[in-house]
Length: 384
Image 1 (spheres, rainbow, N blue to C red):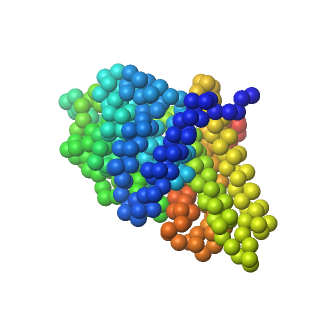
Image 2: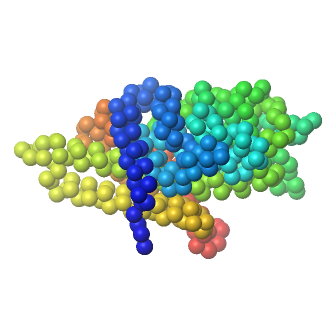
Image 3: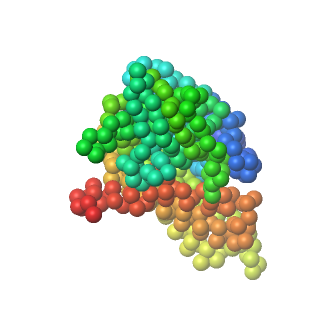
């Protein structure tokens, strides 16, 4: 069993790591304080080719595999989770549905600019009363004279209100048969009359990722904006979320690695009782546990990504990776603050930001409780 990354993946990882340390790290605290997506950073990420990693060259991508994308997300999250989720959502939630389920015309129209990072797109699934219960969707879309007319709202939608957002794909009820909802996915371009982007949320973490509530009021888009087969919108998006969970696991590993890195650095520099605090066994045990958790979580998402690339079933492994990696990210962030003592509670130290950014990983793209349900079902246990 070969557990090493391919040479080209190792080279790519080094390039992204150098980019993050040189172009992102010096500004992460300032961007977090400003609370707005730094478009200059997005442009630099685009120049590096990050937004087109998993897409074929014919659509402007670089033809890389899914694990390579995850490596980029992990490296970004070591320093800046807001930019890591911007990349993850842009590729996995914005562009990937077009690539997986779009017509050739839709791919030619939307993918090249998304792969180039010239535009971003949102994934409109969650609603005020439909989060974990995404099947509880209330947004509707009815056909009228060759157009879909959408009415409803969406919540917590990433990359939906940036200056370069080109569209949002929204799930909506397109019919009801004997009380059962037919849910389809529809592309809604930015600027469409009746499509309103709300004010940015004030969030605990991910301060400079772009997150908004959306509303649709008699919003009309052409019938051909249907993405994928009618009535398959919900099931198609669940497939997209399987990939997303691996990517979130990669993000969680990156954040946890960043906490470990900062803890090792601080333990070597900080003196107490006349010696480095890194010489105290209690702190050594804490950091050793952090390193063990990080490596186990990394191998978990590597395996899930490998299964995806091999075309083998990976739903259970994706849920396991996301469940475990998000938990250890929260654990490592908490322990890193403890290692730093009072300084861990000060915003100038990165672990403070990592601590705030970690909690959402146990919630977004499937809560930890939902992950456990998915794992139990994949193990053959009955529905409760």
